[in-house]
Length: 428
View 1: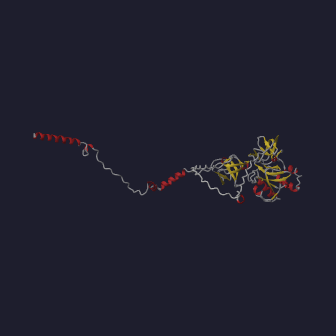
View 2: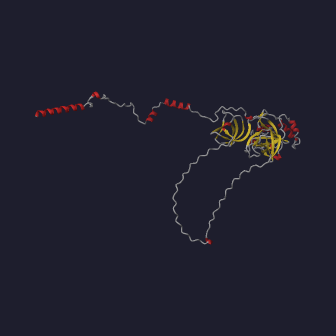
């Protein structure tokens, strides 16, 4: 019995040891079933970073790299001028068409130049929506005057005939306030009324009502149908209606023929194109042309009432230049502009030196009324009605004026009275 117990005990020990041997399979000490051991070492930089990554990158840029970067930026950077274009004016300044209309700058900055080309000097720079008066224009350029009185040439493409207004900033919407509950007011005790005889009454001073701006009354006129050809006696404006309050459309030069189809009761011709010109600035006969000799004109002027010796000599001297070409800034018999002709005649006939500038001539001499005009008086014209003298002519008697008109006709005579006269100056 004792032997059986011992045998059973040994059998149990053997079974237990066998089980423990099987459970030990796959343990960490079993090298054949594990990945080989590796040592991981973190690489260390051979320099020390003392600042941020961005500051270190900036410190390591070489001078050569910085210089090349700046050069690359400059090579792709352009300065664009508003009139940096190849617009070539096909007309000379003296061939420009007279205008007189109002224009507005339609770009951020527009250059006003001394000549009609982009290589000339910049006289001024005008900002967006600046208003100008266009005195004349060619194929690509306009001769304009700024509100400061500066004159020069500007690319027509930079201008607008419609008024250009600065944009109005959009107002920030006002937040709607949160309504505050209204408390019920406590009734105030009724004061004992003061007898009327002792009561002081404060009378507020009434605020006068603003006088409304009157609405312009449209011009009332009637037209009478006619059909004839008239001739402009000067450079005259063409308007959309029979009055100076109507818009300018274009203009006529001295001697231009005009077909008219009606006349208004307020003194305007209606042209065949449907526009209007001032009747008193037109004549039924064409002005004297270059082919008319001085003898023919002076012989018809002997009844002018002016001293014949003075009249004949001076008038014939002026008329000797009939047909001389109109040249912008010209002041010699090879070519005149209006003030150049006046200054040349007075310097060579009377020995009087006058400036080569219409506005400056208008400030000299003695003022004369239209009723007292006489031979040798200088007539000053303001075609644009802007207070600036654009043209001068000379009265030579017998209802005749002479002047350098434009590049088409040169020096011509016109009938007196001429248009847009604002002053007459006497120098002799």
